[in-house]
Image (cartoon, rainbow, N blue to C red; front, side, top):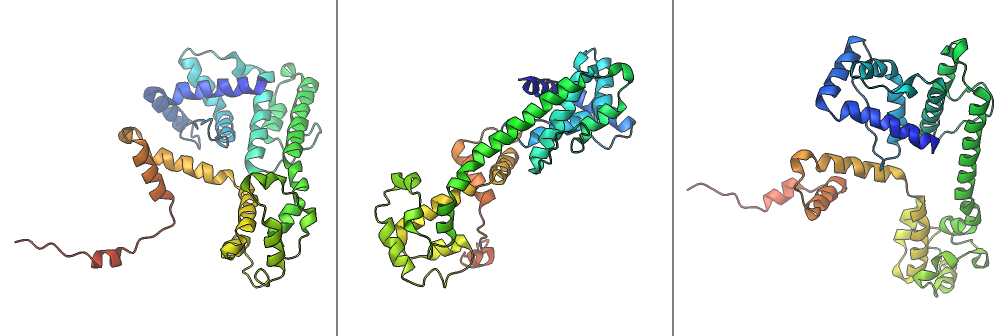
Length: 294
């Protein structure tokens, strides 16, 4: 809840500046006057969780300019000068950035080696501003431990799923009795064992391409049940990249100028934007009769 409130306040301040054209323009001029490398702030989209780290990082990089701008606009946020709140903000920023990079190099010590922004603010504070360091560190460590535990809980299924993944990679050598097929009972896989025996007695997989998806797509329909199970296993390895890309495409398609698009038209535009199909314009145009003026 504490970090949720931090994100809520950061978003509120960013929206105050970015959502109003005059404020946004004035803040951009302020950044330009102080020779900042940034032109403005980053907006946060709660659907796209990866934007959280970018929002927080830009916020703290423009913190000094933001204090000045808010003061000139009679907006008083005491949190922006509260050293304990700032420490939590810096930790939260570093934490989100590590999650974005999927490279959580966490060490439980007081050097904050992998928390650059937190380390920087701690090195710059005055003696009379000393934060409640021990209390904050315990709080940070509890969050780290909880996150590690959540990762362990989420990925423990991969260990239990090991035999099924072996089937996906080496169906010609896997042992049917070791497979855990209860995940797939809803698909009506009664013929799975018989199809596996037929597959292992043939040389289809051994002579197939090395790419897993191509291997399974190349199998004839006589192994339809095996293919359904394989495709189900492959589907669990989806990435957030595809979702992130799709949201970016939607933002480009559905703009203020095109806000009257109906769902069917929007879906068609997304399909056109995401398809890998490349039409042969030359061939298509050659089949059209030229219209001559009379």
